[in-house]
Image (cartoon, rainbow, N blue to C red; front, side, top):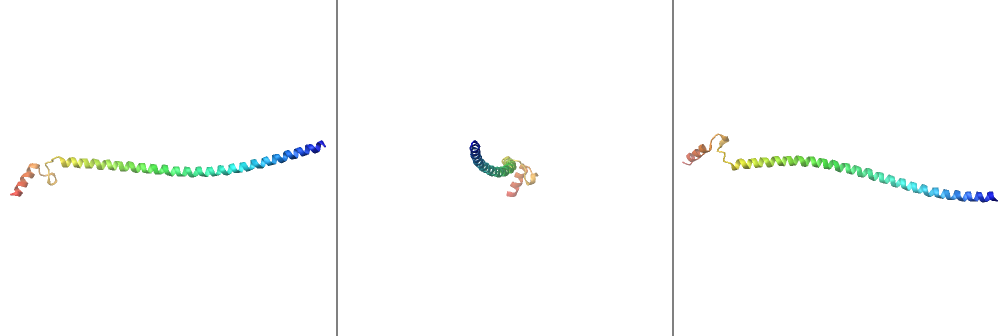
Length: 110
């Protein structure tokens, strides 16, 4: 009789362990599925981040180039303004002085 009781206890323990094993397997499969989903999300996020970093680099390069062009154009504008505001005394391609230009203008008026 003791052997029958031991056998029943072992069968009960075996059934409990099988149930626990089933629950653990289901939990493991759920975690593996979750891990796979998270890994896919991570790869997508990394790809998006890489693309955004490349866009930032490209835009910074273009911004630097445009800033240099703007600085050059601004410098040319300032130089042009300074040349226009300063009497040069030159005209007709820089060959006639200011006094000669005035004399020619007076002769033309006469």
